[in-house]
Amino acid sequence: MGPLAGLRVVELAGIGPAPFCAMLLADLGADVVRVDRPNSSPVAGPPSRDLLNRGKRSVMVDLKNDRGAEVVLRLAAKADVLIEGYRPGVAERLGIGPEQCFERNPRLVYGRMTGWGQDGPLAQSAGHDIAYIGITGVLHALGRAGGPPQVPLNLVGDFGGGALYLAVGILAALRSGKGQVVDAAIVDGAAHLATMIFGLVSAGVWQPTRGVNLLDTGAPFYDVYETSDGEYMAVGPLERQFYAEFVRLLGVRDAPGQFDIPHWPELRKRFAEAFATRTRAEWTAVFEGTDACVAPVLSLTEAPQHPHIAERGTLVDKDGMVQPAPAPRFSATPAELTTPPARPGEHTRNALADWGFDDIDDLMAHGAVREQG
Image 1 (cartoon, rainbow, N blue to C red):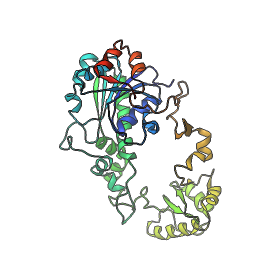
Image 2 (image 1 turned 120 degrees about the vertical axis):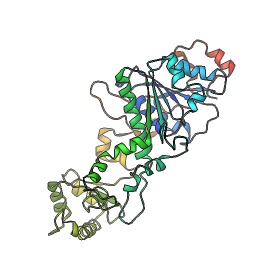
Image 3 (image 1 turned 120 degrees about the horizontal axis):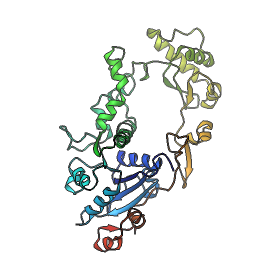
Image 4 (image 1 turned 30 degrees about the vertical axis):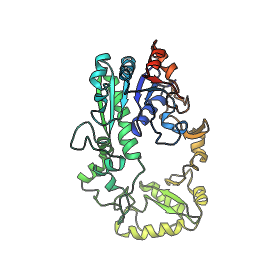
């Protein structure tokens, strides 16, 4: 199932962006075997609820065992892709770095996911999403005028600038037909996401001050407004014809011009006053289906019930969990959710057998691999 059916991926267990990248490949049909280590502590709740492990199989390998690294190298020999998210040099010290793997499989695509990258002054430093986007200029640009930078969850760094760029890099490397290392650094990807904004800064049409620009809540027609019941509407009619429809439906008469910037404070006040007169549901009924570019701001628990989200199956209830469906969609090779999140070591026997191991009992007796207890 899916456009990546037949692709074999080894994922060395980690947290955040590397597992997300492997999940994305699994969603699209790849056979992903996750290598978990004994006694690892869950970081995203119970393993059975860690959606980043859906669609994968888990084998438990003791990399401190003198035969543990050999198991990973044997998997790499049969894989198309290997993904790891260790600090630079750790995989090499474990005996499963790129060169060791390339000796077994020269065509392997070896995906490396880090925050700072494989080199540079900070390469060996610990970090998390917030720090990575902090040094790129991206975090500084997020927030309202006069306020502090606003943290966009870990979506811009870990998953946008990290996991998605690793996935693109892996697929591009596979297309090249050459075994190689893909160095996916969150700092690189997050900066690359902001290419358009850097261009606007260079052109002198974007100010490096938060909350005064077209897309950062500086414009009153690109913002959120509170409704009478304490909820919010998202407003974004950038084009003149859409703005005209928005103002008409909102009921604001004789308003200053859309790009009459000195009058933006007045315009924002009038928009806020208008939205405060009705509930979110009432405003949704006014705007939904129009070209005014306005939508309700729904919570994570409300979103699955929205008619558009529900009809498309964007969020689905599977295995007792509401979760995003695979994306994007394919006309000839559709992807679908398969198995629930894998528990560490749950598939040690069947995954290794499927990948051609005929000495599983011996490896278990030696302590190199283990099953879920």
